[in-house]
Image (cartoon, rainbow, N blue to C red):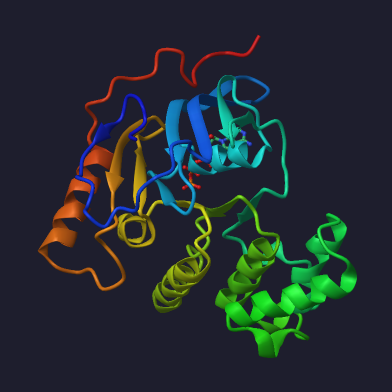
Length: 284
Ligand SMILES: Nc1ncnc2c1ncn2[C@@H]1O[C@H](COP(=O)(O)OP(=O)(O)OP(=O)(O)O)[C@@H](O)[C@H]1O
């Protein structure tokens, strides 16, 4: 179901899987702010969307529109000043192992731990698995991301793409309810980015995890997402939702190019009025 206030710009394709009645994740009228010493910065304004199990939901928007801030709030690291975020119908009150984030930065892996220990450690630390089971699970997930041979290597011995694979294995090994990815491939070269998108989709085909993926790349959004939430420029508001099931890694024809143009228009069309209480507000 499209979020309130957002335009639905594409039709549901016949391949659309039937949805369960209750969404897994609900972002309901969420406004997020940062308080700096001299002002309030409104990062998002009354954003609403729902994510169902096994969906690949992409948050797409220009730099500074509040995508990362929204992901932080879903992760429980920031509380909304307005609205509510719910997982399985329960309000999100803080971080938890049910919502794990893969970031863009390559330095998200502790450098003193081997690849295997990087994946196993959160399982042990969170009490999810005993040491031996954690090592077995780590081996399983490293195999899934094609890094079985690198289990004893250290992060600095890996390429950027390999480090991102470890971060994905580490997150999925914890079996989160939602995997949150914040521009995970943005720092990679174009070829590696493409390969990582392929691998992520192959992994999703196999595991069917629920994904919320942040990007500012229109093509990446269309390829990775089964549904896209398009945010307006700063402060981010939900401008439209697009079903993008029909597009994949092989997409390049007229329909794909038309979708890119359409989304581009949605991203940069200035027709939306400014938010009244905006970033210029002074803090008390
Ligand atoms: N810690 C902070 N303190 C104050 N303002 C912040 C802070 N972090 C982000 N902002 C502001 O909040 C707004 C949203 O930032 P955010 O990083 O969420 O955007 P984004 O869409 O993820 O951008 P990008 O694609 O460039 O990462 C921006 O105006 C940004 O300057």
